[in-house]
Image 1 (tube, rainbow, N blue to C red):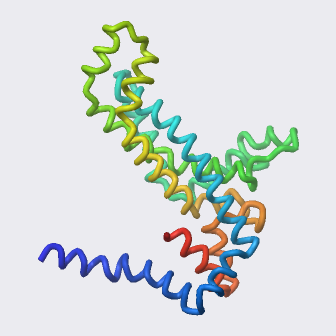
Image 2 (cartoon, rainbow, N blue to C red):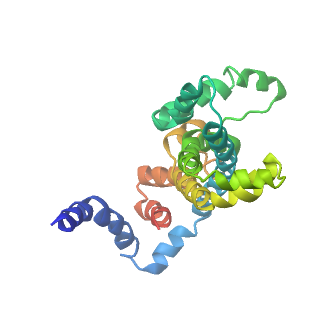
Image 3 (cartoon, helix red, strand yellow):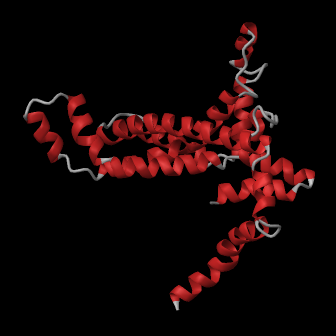
Length: 240
């Protein structure tokens, strides 16, 4: 009965919506679908999404491992406040996150006004998309890696130290290999979240075709233009 109820809920809520993307995409034949997918603007948006998501994933894995290690291994005053701060991006609407980045790095922003003198701007560039992706996905890698560290058997670390290993060697050869699964899971979650990010990206990128238009923004633009086939081609790739 339980399995039947789960399937009954999943069919209209998950399976049918996803299936409709592929059914519609192939309704006019694979050739038509391929032509829509190979449009220059479509390919550019996919490449940009892959690039920015990959960079954000690498950055958040690096920061996430360090933050998780510090929060797991050390007890200090303000650790609870720091934990809440790290988790904040998951509670903030992504459009608000993008708007906050604009207020900070925009031409008249708190920090962006100083960049104005150098004629370099972060907003409405690829760097802005990466920055937004890092902001909204930072808690994901941290949230997976920290529980793994908390449950890690410290006897292996103690044994390494008694054999003369430095703290860095213990971390490099004992801790990191034990976190391989958590790191991979954190990377997948971060990448999947980044490649589908819309709310913050549309605020900081300007949605400029062939410049700062990511795949989700391309879908949004094509849908508004009435080009359902073009939107569906990229949507199918992201869904897959």
